[in-house]
Image (cartoon, rainbow, N blue to C red):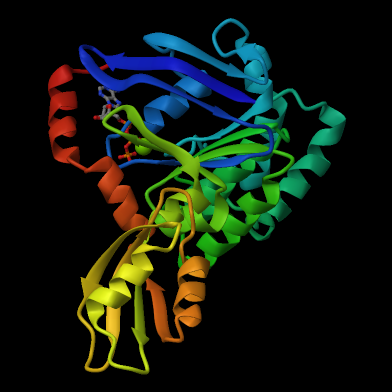
Length: 323
Ligand SMILES: Nc1ncnc2c1ncn2[C@@H]1O[C@H](COP(=O)(O)OP(=O)(O)OP(=O)(O)O)[C@@H](O)[C@H]1O
Ligand SMILES: [Mg+2]
């Protein structure tokens, strides 16, 4: 549905996005992850046709973003980092205005606007001026304008930023509800958000894609700590050897444990979940499995992959000058 091939974007001489490629299947919901300044917003602006690339190609639904911009714009809903709102308009008037811009037939507009206000929980402020809304409500109006024409593809740049915890959950549910019929890319720094909403992630760092994988696989890179006890007087080396023999295990390291117990950090082979195999091996050995918990969070996997050094790239960008 979305194909990004060899995309680069320079601001003056500064390379913000450097030869990235990835694709998003129809109905997929992809988290676009990266530290500040990684190039997420820049990539999203190019995909939505807001900015031309310096090199490379982007197609949406088979249409080239720059050769057939109208075809692409019809199919895309975009929530930018700062939603493009008109403060002096009421919510309903603004959404009606956007609906008209997006080419929805006049006769369908009132119903469509009412539906979308309900979906984004802004119906209760429909007649309020946008300038009088709180940040969270403005963000919801931003989301409403992105989906008012029922686009196939949604590009959401940090859709839950500035929302309170209740609104965050509501917005995530709303986005999840839109997946399936819509293809969605959303950028975020919030790892639990990716776990809650996305099936796949594209991780970028300093303008380059460092990982494209399923959320499932990324989580399986995690290290697990297990704690067990044995009936007899088995020694730690023997217990560790046994765990090392489990097929999906790649590494076993000793972990501090209380008296009479053994604890190890266990890392699995990439893409496999070691937990069922390890649990089985422990039980088959006649030992007592006391605890098994993830000791690496998705955050740690993310940090390892991005090895963040945002300050440097930001300085370099500022020296590079404006667009
Ligand atoms: N108009 C511009 N002119 C010059 N440099 C820019 C411009 N817009 C972005 N940059 C630089 O390009 C790099 C990528 O910026 P971008 O906004 O795409 O990052 P991001 O991943 O969206 O970051 P954040 O998480 O902070 O939103 C940054 O180093 C930024 O300073
Ligand atoms: Mg950004």
